[in-house]
Structure formats: C-alpha cells, structure tokens
Image (cartoon, rainbow over the protein chains, first blue to last red):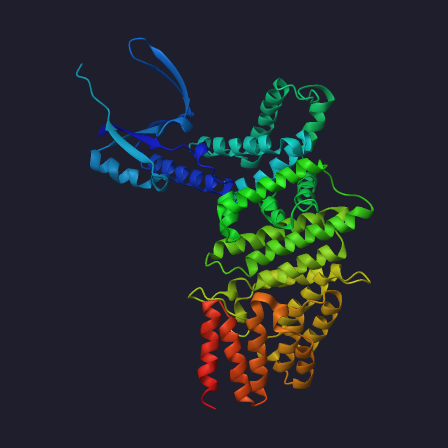
Length: 115
Length: 413
C-alpha cells in the first residue's frame, strides 16, 4: 500500500451563490464519501482550506493578498489516503461531489524518501 | 443524526436566522444579514464534511449568533448608531430572541414585510421565497418558470421599496391587521398555486412550493392574532389540494384531471388534517373565498369516483364563491358543472353572462366548454364551429392534442 493525496481544485462554494438547500446536499455527499473511506480503513487525514490566499513570490518576495473570487481556481482541500496504486485512487475519487461544478481531483503520490 | 431530521434543515434555518437577525438589526441591514447567514451555511457545509454536530440546528444558531457579533463590529466601525449589544441587558434580550417562539414571531414579521402593500404584487412572492423560505435566486426562477435576471430585479425592487417606505419590522395591530393579513394570505395562496398548477415537469419543485406555502400558513395559525377562521380555511384548502398532488401526474409526467386520477393515491392523512382545520375554520358567521374553495375541494375528495361527485353541492359552493368573488372563470366552471349534470338550461344562463374575451388568454376554455354544451345537446355542427374557435386560440400543446381528439370523434356524427 502507498500513500496518496487527493487535492481538490476549482471553484469555491462561497463564489457560486449556492442556496442553503444545495449546500446541504453537497455537505451530505462529502460526509457520505468521508464515511465510506473511513469504513474502508483507508483514510489517513484531510483538511479543508479557507478561501483567503497570501502569495509570496519571486526573489523580491512580492506579497499579494487574494481571495478565491479573484483567482481562476483554488485548492479547496485535500484528503490523504492509503491505496494500492493510481487506479485504485481514481476509483475512490469517483465519489468526489463537485465534478458538476467543473472542479477537479488531482491525485498525487506521496514521495517516500530512502533513509 | 437521522436524515429526516435534517431534511431542508439549511433552507428552513436560513429563513429563521434572516428573520431573527433582521429583528435585531433592522430591515435596512437586510443585505448584510443575508450574506452573513449564507456564510454560516458555507461554513457548515465544509466543517460538517468531517464531523456532523450532534445538534445541527443548535450549531447553526450558535454560528449565526456569532456572526451577529461579527456584523455588529463591522457596522459599528462604519459608525452606524447601534446599541451596544455585546454586554449587559441587551445581550440577554438578544439571546431570548433565539428561542423557538421568538423565532416564529420574527418569521411572521418577515412574512408581513414580504407581503406589504407597498411592495409590487409581483415582487412579493419572490421576496418571500428568498427571505422567509431560504430559496436561492436560481431555485425561485425555476419554481416560477421565470428567468434568474427577472427574479434578481424583483428582489432588488422589493428591497428598494422597503427602504423607501421605511417599513417597520412588526406584526400589524388593530385596524390594519385584517388588510395586511389579506395580502399575506393572497401571497401564500399564490405560492401554493404556483406549485399546484405549475406546468413545470419538475415534480420536486412543485411539491416544495406547496410544502413551503403550507409551512408559512402554519406560522399564521400558531400566532394568536393571525389564527383566524380564514387562515384555517386557507390551510384546509392547501391540505385538500396537496392530498391530490401525487395523483395529479401520470407515469409520463402528464397532468391528470380529476376524472383521470387514481383516487387510491390521494393522501389520506392530509385530507384528515384538512378536515380538522375546516372544523376550526367554520367557527364564524362570515365565510371567506378560502372557505368556499376549501368546501369545493373537500366535496371532490368525498366522492369515491368521479361519477359519484356531488355536483349539486359543488355548484352551490361556486354560487356562494361567485357572490364574494365575481370572476368570469367561476361562471365558466359553473356552466361546465351544469353540462356535467345535464342541466343545460342553467348552463346556458351562465354562458349568457360570459364573453370569451373575459377569460383573456384562456378564452379557448370558453369555446371548448361551449363545444361540449352543443355536443351534449346533439348539435354537432355548432359544436364543431366552437371547437374550431377553441383550436384557434389554444396555445398549450397538450390541450391542443386533447381538443383535436375530440374533433375527430365528433366528425364521425
């Protein structure tokens, strides 16, 4: 088994003018997905990120403050899971609730360093 | 946490919190309040992904309360003259506003605001669905079969009207109460009808609109000043109609009329609830339009088959209704009932009081009824002339198909 990260990229709920009913519907789906992974014993962790961004770039360490509304896409959160390979994670990622918003799941393997 | 407990929790909670916060901060801050409440739901939708709270409603209320303080700080820094609510007796008073009974009181104030005569009648429904019921612009648009842009304009206009008239956030008292309540009931009735008679293929939205109207009407019944015979009658009417909601749609999503409906699909508990409400409604000397409409709906529900319908009684109620509300559509219905009971003479007297133009875009209903009248009295030539007129004016494709079927049958004679 290897460690993978599923990174969620795209639009934030806060910028989409969603109704309370829609938000609740999505929350239920996220919850069901998390619970499913938990039951399968593959969930290692995960976090959701707030839509505020502070960027520090370049050799001048230029600082920019942004919100999700000002960028094309934003990383909204991630899950860490155990799986056999990329195909297995792809299968797990089928339950991501926000594909219909045009959002993306980026699957990355956690690098193992030789000791 | 049971799923049924949480069904529409966010939506319903939205209306509650917007109302309570408006009571605290005043209608002039409605924009900020709606945004703040929306924020708490976004926060919940993300925080609850991992772990749902044991008491979701309490969690949301607490989050909204915290937002109150946040907004308050913002407003304060913008130098608005607001009382200091973070401490002392004001803070205690505010906590009390979040108790169930006070939440209902605040919601009722919001309903009265949404249905205020200073608002354009077209804007009232949209505004009520947004602020009291927690629908989004998109949901309102699809429920009312209108463009999102139009709804946005209506909401904007409603808010402007509220500001311009400097409306107070209260439940009207004394002489104005009756007039204001009439307007509230009219809006609830319209919301219900939007759901019940909607041409939308989306059964879910139709059910939700009817459910929403019922929920809001229930709020009227819970409050001493608004639990009047006519509000009970309106609630009964909604129960009776709702009982038939499922049976109104065929497997192919077509609208079925009373004659075609499978009566075993009617929802009995709602009929019972309607009957209970009707008993309370009739404890008065003066009946409203809602009383008569409910009586008509109840009469239909009592018949085990369409053929067993007590048309004499229904016609009687329609006559009473017409006295109160002289609408051409009632006359037409009365004429149709008379044809049904083969009372052609009386049918003719009703037709004589009517002009097709009175029914505006539904003039085809007049011609179609007239055609039936002639067919029943074996005057097929005249029946076909009328049917032709009906076909010329009908726009709905389903109705047109129905009329064409009739035409080909009559051409056989």
